[in-house]
Length: 182
Length: 184
Image: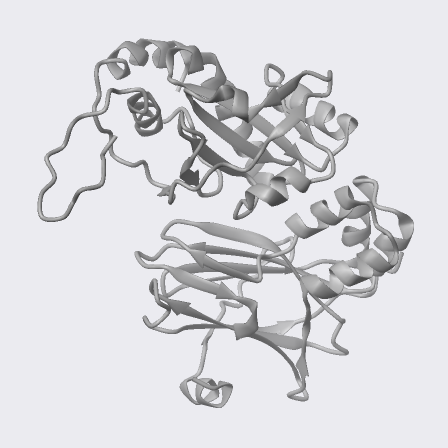
């Protein structure tokens, strides 16, 4: 199915309920999915506290970090595949997420020690995962900060072979807080 | 569940059990050989999983920044108090953190536990957990048989029953209609 077709079928929008910490949450179709946009100060605090070199922390804080949690409450497998997610701004422009390969290339360039690369990797959302019934996955999805508000459209294949029903979730009015500069 | 209740429960759990239902959140694996794991604690005490052949080993990967790890760790400490009565050995592996970070965490959350230190995270990479925390159950022949998805309460009765059943004798099963796989 193409994204054009997806637009025709429409994704189920996430609730507008926002937790005090800015977390947005969707519950439906057997999924629980949350998205929290991190501030540069939060990113800086987390990685600095773990001893990351300043250069690495500065580069991290320049990116938009969305902390995503997903729980599969269904009785079949749900496929988490970042290739099936889109970030669309209010001008209908698509913004690509930054993939592990790109981060790893950056870490190689600045000679980030292996322990920090490992920690950074484990704090990222898996790019592909078959979520079994009851299984959760969590971590950050990163992208260059879009200029304004944007939406996350996520779709999930289901079933062991991925040929089950297609789940679609949309988070509108997301933004990457850039106000609390370091 | 208090430790007292747990200890009272153990004799019941210790009764011969030939098969226990797979607890929720535990995924059967294909029996691939466990990757090498030879690491030291903060004090320099080394453990090599190859030397633990002949018994089940629960290998748990964790990090202090991981929220589910914080919730699960006290239950692992509780499990460590009953493992002498269970047919398993518990191994903790911290992923890519420093002595200071690990000490500060364990000292508060689970002061009786020791952890191996995967200082550069490379051992964790070899084991390819699905995330942190992650727990693998390795059989006496050194093969990965089960993977625990995310965190859980290791002291829950269904998990204790299952862990106890790992030491049960093999029950001969008559193959029927092609179901010829050996059953533990």
